[in-house]
Each structure stands twice: as structure tokens, then as C-alpha cells.
Image (cartoon, rainbow over all chains, first blue to last red; front, side, top):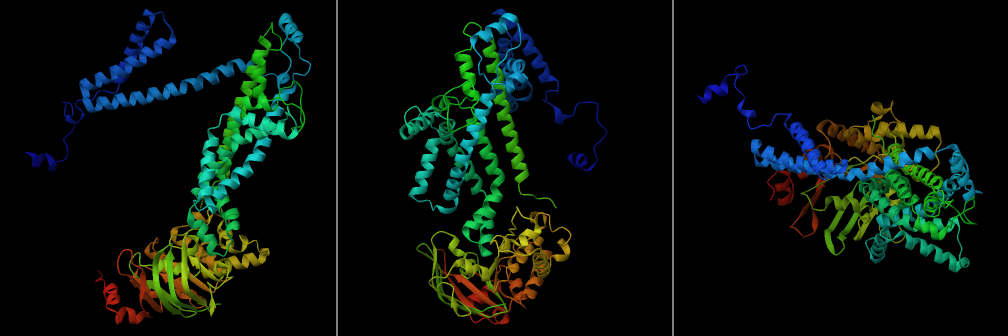
Length: 374
Length: 259
């Protein structure tokens, strides 16, 4: 009697299982499959000599396959495919995350012991192999630091930013606000795209060759390095700023024009302020992108062990080149441990810089974002 | 503070495409004129030529004359910026500047042009403009809050306050109520009625009742078909257009028998 069942309120839950939940795996089923996979994975792994990596790999493969077949047998083909795809997506996510986590863990583990006040406040000036040999022989703390590298990295990156931001910003303003899609605009867009993919060593060679031509061969200063880095930075700044300017609604420009405001004032006071949070965070990410460059710095800024505050004269050390030199040419060829420790600590400092820059980018985006409070 | 507009044989082009053809219209000062007509018939396009806003779009140009108290807006050497500071505009969607407070939005026309204004003058201007837009009572306690936090109707009235703060001669409104609810629409219509005492108001609307309620004169625009230019079919007193139009097309449109 269908009419009865539709009109009367549902009776108290019957003892038998609801028909709506049939062919459903209970909630613990997948955990059980996971546990089984882990055990089976461990067994398989020990067959070829137990290792945590093979254990994880075998368990994951078994879990994905078993999850599919268990679901297929109970819930049907559609659900099984769904389970399979979900598991694959999670697996891909974990695989993508592994190197990142591994890098951070390694750098933290190896970098923190070397992160001493001495490392932060002293340069490598006067550090010779003898000093490191004595340190190892006597078991005293490692001395010599990366102060000169921190100074160099900050100065060179700052100068690269000072060069690239105005150029990049104005290029983007031209592309979005003034160009009418003509040949010049298309040429700029094309070359910006090409520059985005330029290998960093090429940028370094360009800057070195250019300054070599103008100021004589072998000109290496922090400023040359800053120019090399800005070659890498400008396309990133142009691209991100362009995207941000494009999403400023046209209505705001029209509103400003309708008030009798000139175009350049509209851009300066309405368009750019509206997009400033995105522009600022794009610039910050561009800085983060170039702060770790090594190759262009080696050919443009040279390498020294002492502090140099002058970007326009003399060679300059930076964190990436410091790491490179400490690992490739340890201060003491016979006792490389102190150098390795300094290199890892410098790497940690570099990662901290990049992380700070990312945080700053988020902060800027939040501070400058158009308010919508009531 | 209001001027008359006389349009003579105006053609509007987008590139080679003739969008509006042969418009002749005389708009009296201190009156409300409504433009009605089906979508795509060029009434918004024509409205935008009245303060040279259509030039913002690439390829747009006009032939003919638009006279503001006898001076041609399209004469040689006329700066569109000067034109727009005399003929203000309110858009279809409320568009307060999201980076600015309510107060700064009202003062935008002054501040964006870097004109110097004393604090007390600015306060007076804000109060006068917001009062003129019937918004002062609602926002006077939160002038420093962002303009985007207001409701849609309030935002539109803020945009009107922003437009009248620069003391224009004429105010153009491009479907100012189409994004608003009936109550906000009523508030804007009341406001238009008051604005008429000081300004020349031209309004584009899709709502024929609205045209009948607020306007003194009504212009009916129509288009012969896709790809054909829009034309001004009939321009007369609002009462005539809605009760006893001269043209058959107008009668069909206002009585809902269109097409």
C-alpha cells in the first residue's frame, strides 16, 4: 500500500537495517584496509630488506588497490572509482609534500646547531684552514660567520628591488592602461614572457658583460649583481602587476573620469591604490624568487670573506654564494665539518628570509586590501 | 547651476559601426529628461556622448554637435576632462571607490584633482552633498567607514553625492536604479525630483513607470534591427509620450505591445 507509507509519519526505527544504508561500507572499513595494507606492506618490504621508504611505498600501493576492490565488492563500480580517484589525489598530494617537508627537516636539523650568535655577527674575515683545524682538534665551537653574506644578500636584493619595481610597475601600467593592443604592447608581452624563462646564469653573464664593456673587464660589484637579479625580477613584477591591474573594475576608472579626473591621476589615485595589495604581495614574492639566486651572483659580485657595505665598489659575498663556497671549497680542506655547519646554518637563514618575505606578502595583502567593514 | 543641452545631427560610431544616427534633441535646464527604449537601441551610448564618456572605449567617436549652453563639447581644443567636470554621471551599478571612506568618496572629485580644500570647507561640502543625496542622516556617524560597507541603495546615493560634490551643471544617470530594490529605487526617485531644482538631469531607464514618475520630458529610442543604428524616434512631454504619442512604435513600446 504505497499511499499509506507516504502519508503516515515514519514508524519508530524497525529492528531490521534501513534499506537506504544497504551496500554501504561501515565507517571503520577503510581504517581496517589501511591497517591491513600497513601489515602487508611491512611483510613485503622485509622480503627485500626492510626500509621505511619501501614499507610506505608498498603499503600505499596495496591500500590504493585494496580500497578499490573492497569498495567494488560492497558499494559498486561507481563508488569504487570514486575511492580510487580520491586515494590517488591524496597520494599525489603526499608525494608533492614529501620533498618540501624533507628539505625543511634536513635544513632545520643541520642548520640549528650552527646558528650561533658568532655566526650571525661575524664575517669569515681572517678565518683560515688552520682555525678550523684547531676547532676540530680542540673540540671548541665553530667560529667565523655569515654576517658579510647577510649584508650582501640584503643590499643586493634591495638594489635589485629598487631597480625592478619602478620599471616593472610602469611597464604593467603601460600594458594595461595605455596600450591599445598594438604591436609595441604585443612585443613587450612577448619579451616579458621570454624573460620569465631566461636561465639565471644568462642574466648574470649579461650583467657581467655589460658592465665589463662599460667599466672595463672584470668589473664585479654588488650593483652588477643587482642588475643581474633585476633582469630576473622585472618580468615577474610586470606579470603580477599586470594581472592585478586587470582585475580592477573598469567601473572605478569610469567613475573617476566622470568626476573630471585626468587619466594619470585616475591611475595613480584610484587604479593603483585599489590593486596595491596584490601588487605589493607580487613584488614580495618576486624578491623571494631572486633572493636565493646563486649562479648570477658568482659571475657578477664575486666572493669575499670580509664585510662590504658598498654595492658600487668591491666584491661582495651573499648567502647563496657563501653556501656554495663553503661546500665546494671548504675553509680547511682536511676538516670540512665546520664549513658544512656554516653552510647549513646559512641555508637556514636564507629559508627564514624567504619565509619571512612570504609572511610579509600576506601581511601587506591584508593591510592594503580594500576594507569592507560596516 | 544648470545649463541646457542642444544636440544637432549627432552620429555615434564604434569604429566603422554606426551605433546611433541623427539625434536632434533639446534638453531644458532644471528639468528631468528620461531616455527609454529597448536594449541595445543606443540610449546609454548616446547618454555617454553627452559628457564624452564614450571616448573611454577604444574606437568610439561622434559626428555632429553637442552644445552646452551654446558651447560645442566636441569643438576643437575642448578638453574632455573639463566637460566631465561640468557634466557629472551616475552609473548603472553603484561604484564607490573601495579604498576610500564614505567621506573621501564624497570628496573624491576634489581630492583626486589635488585641489586644496580646508578641513571646515571639506566638512561643509560632505554634509551638503550627502544631504543633497538624502544620505546624510544615515551615514553621518560613520563617515570614516569604507563606502563599500553600505547597502546597494545607499552606495548609489553615495555615488550621487560624489557626483554633485563637484558642482556639475548637468547630471547624467545611466539606469541608476536597475540594480536596486523598490525601496531604494523610491529613495533615488525622490532624490531626482529634488535634484531637478538645481540641476539638469538626464536619466536612462528601462522602467517605463519610472520614466513616467520622474521625468518632465521623455525621449524614445528604437532600433530597426540588429546591426542597424539606433535612432531617436520621438521626443516630447512625458505625458504626451505615455498617453498620446505621435509615432506608432512609441505607442507599441509604452503600451507593452512591442515587436
